[in-house]
Image (cartoon, rainbow, N blue to C red; front, top):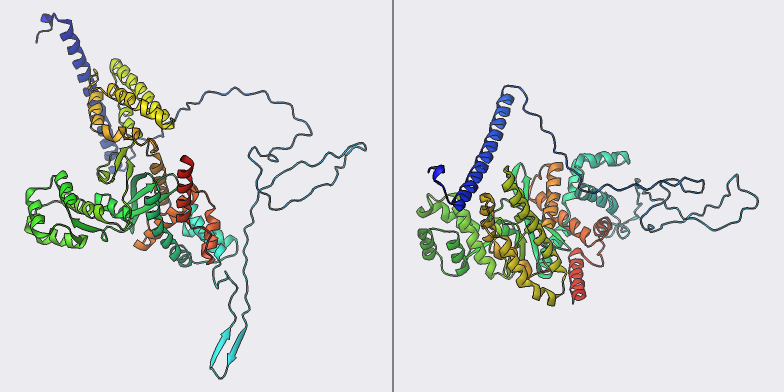
Length: 552
């Protein structure tokens, strides 16, 4: 091509746009190479016993406008000292003390004008060792001894209040066994690490309510939000699936994050306990996963349609059948997930998820019975990661981001509108979506990302048909932070039972915060052997029934 021979302005413009994009691609490749080279140089320096580049946290700029300070009024003797007043609502009063001693310098003509209320919030933490002298009798004729029964709620050993305090400090306050032991030592209570571990793990009622919570939330909640995060058990990598909604949070730790693990979490079981079934749904899922024809033929020959079997049985086929000799682990996991979907679609032990909101992770696809929605914040995040260096491309990128956030605000307003107004605005929002995500800009990387978004069009626009579902999955992200925080404090659990107890306590504690109820008071009732008026699963059910009746 000879630039001197170009006479068409349109051809010249297209050539310049292509050149700008090419420069942008080379700039991105250069910056990526420089980062990799710097990281390699740091690693070489560390291997030589030196230090790498220091890493400083990026300072976050405050976006809040500066508030003009009001001039402070001069203080007077009648003003209360700082800390005597509280801007919040008055607390619940447990005791009232009248202070009516007159000041020393009170004038003789002073007139009594009533009382000014001052609140003090304090807590009493002290040891209380109780000795029960139990009456005993001996019958010579029967040859046995008889004793009086302890009062209701009293137990020998650790009392219900101390047991509840230990559980709240560990599961709610993220304190380790050692720190709990140190705190109790300051109170004059000596408990070994093994005793504290027994208090935290031996609670049958916790596992019972944990099992009741899952079918309750799947039945009552109009939608389920899901996400997962890394966890550990005995030093091995695990994944905790998080299910949450408006009034609950539920945690289930599985060996991995495959589709089989997701089905295990949704059925409240472990991966090995999940049932598989060879059904038309399983066949369809295997075809969607591009399972080879020889594998499909093997299952058609080996299993009858509708056959139910376990994960261990499937693993036996993987190890013994010659057709699976060269099949890698990813393909075997896809087959197991498809067969688990076959059983999940026909089972009636737990309700199926109707409306599911997640990010675009592949393990959540085709699980919802009704609709699967994607998080808008995750979709927008990909566009925010673009950082063009050319001013012309930067202006295109910024203009697109502005229009994208405006459209997001329009969706938020749409959710608050009455149903008849939503019906009239639905088609208009669909047209705005198609106009916004038009992959015909001069910024090629932006065009590529727009084409990826268009492939998820149905998942993103599903919020127009289900406006009660949030636009983002932030609730699941925040719930997953509890697992991360627990992992940072305690690193890992030591046994499968310990992992299950941790998930159970975490689920009940986080659900109690959303209801909201005092988890400490609830634990005291449960540990004392008392039956509360309402269990946490029952309270979740009542909350949703009240919310639905209010909505209608």
